[in-house]
Length: 104
Length: 180
Image (cartoon, rainbow over all chains, first blue to last red; front, side, top):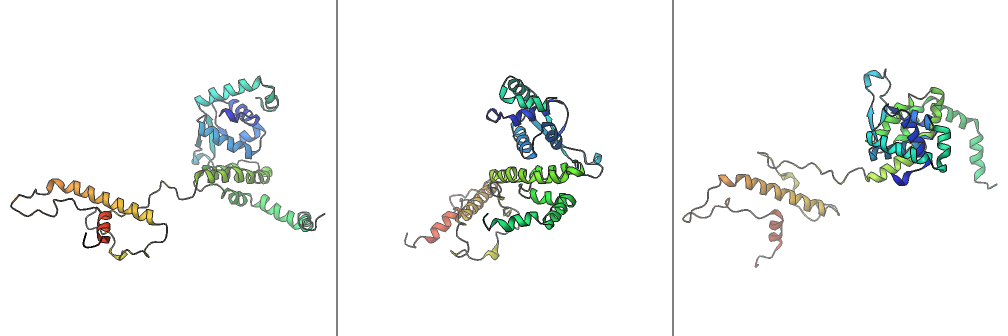
């Protein structure tokens, strides 16, 4: 994942780490990161493949007739890696804009 | 201005274009979204995910969400499709008939195999099928081996006590000249 250290990934990391133990929805991550869905979803796929995120589906009985949504939760590995990524990016002026916009 | 662009620009400025866009993205966003999602592979979770997300988006923002998914589907869906390769995976093996079952038949209606039986390019499939049949026959012989009586020197050797040649060997021996 080293070569993917972009401002977009830092923004997504900030959005995810704002609630480390919670469940995240694709649209919520889009809202909190301020990124387009065309950027967020491919990054989420990469994070899933790396094992930084785990995914699951809502219980269909609790959705009141709408389709169940897919949620993402940060794994232990993801907490370590995303935390390190944010720490590293915090000291890098290249990512200053990400912290100005997306910090929780 | 090139004359080719003029009708296109005129179409964009036309009120009917706006009506169509409003209808498509405003009233049938689910339909349009599902069309975009056809770019993803059939079993991709993203198809269900994005449809479900649409209903979580506030109604006034749905048209924009759907429009954005075109980009997502074009870049992520198509690249995922390319990454996975063709729809029929190489790992998937065609269902083979269970010829080891009692009373099973290898297919008498198939008729004699000639050079016209198979289309070009099916040679590998034929070879693999022959190997598979050979393996099945060998397995069957292995299972049956303890029950076969060992021929005594007085009695003529039984045909079943000898391992029959493989199918490919048979095919080869048939094609050989008789004087060999």
